[in-house]
Amino acid sequence: MKKNKIIVVRNLSKYFKKIKAVDNISLDVEKGSIFAFLGPNGAGKSTTIKMLTTLLIPSSGEIIIDNLDCLKNKSEVRKAFGIVFQDQSLDDELTAYENLDFHGALYSVPKVLRQERIMNSLQLVNLSERENDFVKTFSGGMKRRLEIARGLIHHPKILFLDEPTLGLDPQTRNNIWGHIKQLNKEEQMTIFFTTHYMPEAEQIADKIAIIDYGKIIAQGTLAQIKEKSKSKSLDEAFLSLTGRSIRDENATSLDRMRMKRRLRR
Image (cartoon, rainbow, N blue to C red):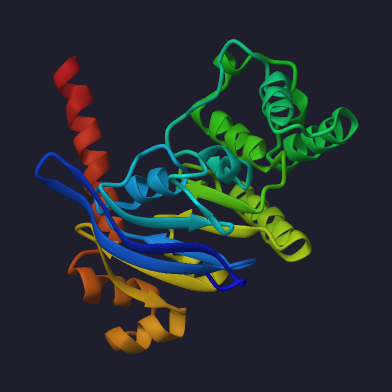
């Protein structure tokens, strides 16, 4: 593995019985870069992230994180990254402060530094006034903001973000990305994220990979992807390469959720 590659994936696949969730993908992520991983719902994004973060065992292929084989060195690999999951994973019976403090302690962040980072992170996501409130009293949006704050506490070498700003208002979204970009620049923290917001990928990512039906169908810089698809924007490129809009796919999922709620009534 080259020294400037902090994530190397080779011929990675994941099968659930006969379903190919991830189908023989390969990618490289350079140290200190911001990498966007795009795809419609069900394309294999979250499954890939779960394998990269040792939560799922691949059916085949190789994953190297920070020069370590993920399958052979799980404990050491986990120290190298932080993750903000798509699904909520906070402890509702703890306060906002306690959730962050517990996470920092797990990663051996010194107490004095931990307190400073907790307050800075809570301020970043506009939750400073709720630090002593139980998470079970928070709205869904507040919980999302707290999860992002938690993922930043130990300042990892790699930060995995699975739909990190989904459901957040534009001001909070911009504030969070401003802080993440600052960490990326000052600490050379590598960022690997998925998103449904094309402007995030266009404006923030150094490189982009598009996955569809478990296969990577394009990867490179924004300019390279637009050139390959003969498109003027990432939105157009995505539509050209996948045959569907990421917004349409997101709207379809929302419609399905609404239908399920109606059926329960």
